[in-house]
Image (cartoon, rainbow, N blue to C red):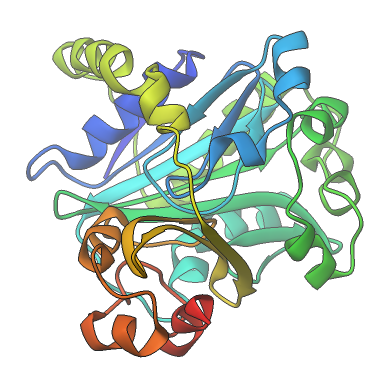
Length: 325
């Protein structure tokens, strides 16, 4: 396994670099640590405008980018340490797959004296509060798993930049984003964010059996700068295109929230958009194309609907079909 430390703080570049490193041919498994300047990172399947407070974002100079994995929107700043673990394809979709992938991170925190535990779909908690979230995907036949570690994140900005999902907070019995998150600094001896990053890197290297840091190949870094400009800085990728709809229904399931928006003509689905904080290894656009042209009836959709397991993980066929009722 290789260990990369990415010292750039440009969020578009960092996501581009991660994508390229994770999806390059038969490259060996690696982990990478990195940080972003103040940024909201939205999930692959989310409606960006619905996840952020646009006025707050503009007033405070916070950037917005979209990642290639599912899950929910998160706030990053230099008090947040991000980790990426990637390698050959791993098709393990068992209920405990996230916990297994996050185990090295949980183990490092516990060795450091932090009573961390994996919880729910993709969170690491300390004393019942979230200190880390994670996401995963398969890219060009390779597995990508990444997550956040809140060390001394600006909680006021975190709460101001994000619009919490009312269905999610209601299901957890908690009224706000700020009430359910914590900084790891509360549970560790006094140290700076830089000291935390260096200490976490040392401990994770020992845990994963990595001897030393590997330099990021110059050609990959240059390609990442191009990809950042072409994709991750583009408004189309970050915000999508405008979509007028005649029907909208939203629900929250064990696998995450799903919103269905349809444009209907002569009782047929002319076009649709499926969004939410769910996970999937296949772009949900495939499902959108599959259902376009179908009559807008549950039984008609059921008749043409294929397997949605790789598209919307953790959401059953019956749950998805309930959105058409």
